Amino acid sequence: MADDMNLEAEIATALAGGSSKALVEAGAAAVPPLAARLAAAETADAKSHLVALLAAVGGAEVLAPVLPYIGDPDPDLRARASATALKSVLAYGPPAGPVAAQLRTAVREALQAPDAEGGVLLLGALVPGSEDVLSSHLSGTRLVKAQPQEPTAPAALAARLALSALGDSQARTSLLTQIPQADPDSLVFMLKALPLIDAPEVLHALSATTLSSDAPVADGRPSGLTPAREVADVAVEAFVARLGLAPSFSITPGAIYTAEQRAETARLIAGSIPN
Image (cartoon, rainbow, N blue to C red; front, side, top):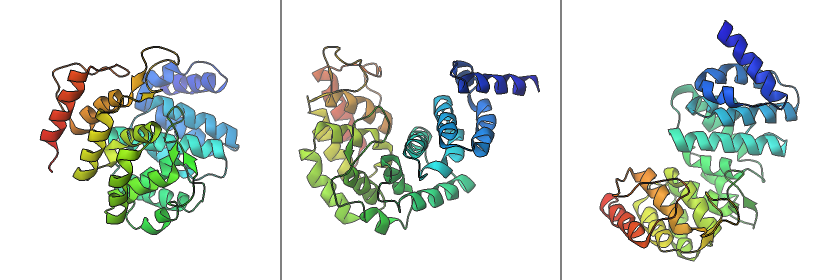
């Protein structure tokens, strides 16, 4: 009881603008009281703040509480909720059981909106039967983000990634044509979504393009700090994590990797993915 009271006090502190450090340190134990407050919240602002706290806590447990809001009419709330849901799935894998069913229902409904969030489009990869509604997002020039701090990319690209994951051969062929010509932001967008990509030919194409790209990107380092990170640096970290590679060098998020380290990563990828 004392622990519950302490958590409630920490939540109240965080909602009043104080530190959320104690909630983050509490981990999964902080999710139920935050989820209860989220379900009872009456305004979009209050819900957004609670979703932000759940995102800060992180973990697989935050997925279920935020799913009802990934298609909310309030743009800030749905952006926060979809980003939190996607981050949880990318880090901990697709859910099972009732949460999996909840995800499929929530994503299918959120995809109906013409301005569906980038996270929702990518989560469509986990929703068989959503091919038609995903295809409706292939036209136009709308840009989306998967996470607030990440670059924008065309909504059509996010939809195409999801369709490819669902086995759409036309979407996969289009990706293979698009990847070598993609701009740096789109390449980073795809790298961040790497856990949702399983087609060997797409993985090969993406690794070949990104590991050879020296285009600067704003990822993992403070703005203005030189030298800047490059697409290839993001690719090293993304592919090592996605494929469980064991390079001879240390992986440090936000690091800059040498040409030799990038080449080693490419060799490990070639030996890890079937042709």
